[in-house]
Image 1 (cartoon, rainbow, N blue to C red):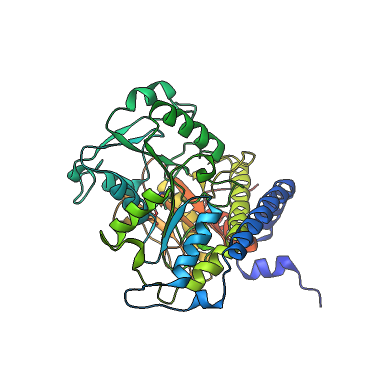
Image 2 (cartoon, rainbow, N blue to C red; image 1 turned 135 degrees about the vertical axis):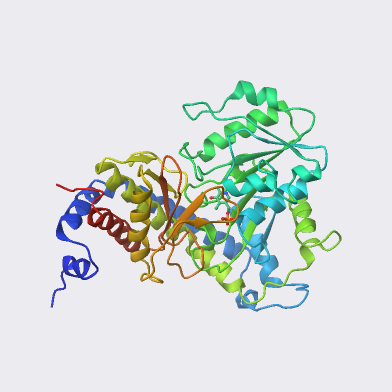
Length: 429
Ligand SMILES: *Cc1c(COP(=O)(O)O)cnc(C)c1O
């Protein structure tokens, strides 16, 4: 018996009109998807080569406990990461609780009282405002005597070189560059443009540490910011590099001295990288990393498909469907709180876990407005899994990301469109 695909979509609540519209939009994307598959192929081989060169074996998957001295799996994985990111060293740990924590460790360990931190790419990710002390917060860098300065991108999204040059001074100890747009509608930076910015900054002050917040960017391109001069790249394992399998964790890859500083801060002065048991999670770190290039490709296709579909419905999308991608986030300006809530309901209803629950906006630590999050994930809060979130404030953007497989990302977007239609927010004909 031939099974009809429309039939199973219908059983899952998608009507013919929505499905027909979605399939039409998808037709135009095949060529772009082929390019994404090629990047995934390149990165798959890059990861494989690193695993082979580091002689990863069964012994690397054993759990360690207690102090975690001589943890072969942990030490080898850190070597694998440094090969992939083309760095001298790396710190990849389940004790790093999330991306914000990884960034906090990298920043607070490589800055000293009296130093200044510079962001030449505008406002950093919301949670970093409290790390830095832009919003007063206990334990912030500001409390420890680290000042902050910021140069915004120009209105067209390009670097404001003139003001960046003025902002770099004797005290500038570290420059933080966020690759992804985060909760903003500015363009995401390409690795190439990050390289140009780093060259410019090093040309003014050679010994300044250039750190890149690499969240959501890993494996989207064939090169990473550490290939073009970044001293440190930092990210979360419940985003791209964990491949959906890592249940927790973060990484920092970079110059030996930067990583040593970070390790002394993460554990303790004197102990550094030597301690930190990898517990029972190390195999999922390896296996997730192995899957990460194709998982990232699925998420990327989902983002482009979402852009194509929502653009066609008259919403403003960032970036638009034709733009070259440098991260997996798709921002859509939905224009009202009702539309943001409706979209997120649709994504939630498409999830493999908790599809029966209804997401509601609520106050989240680290964010300055209520946020609605749709995430029916196997790993709690994982945003490499299909997820959408939106701060309930002007201009009512929703940020959509993830999808461990493309068929699931596709279904999620279709379901969100169906929800918008059912709630009377859009009309298809
Ligand atoms: C997700 C993200 C972070 C913070 O990571 P968490 O794991 O949510 O703490 C920081 N910067 C950017 C650009 C991000 O996307």
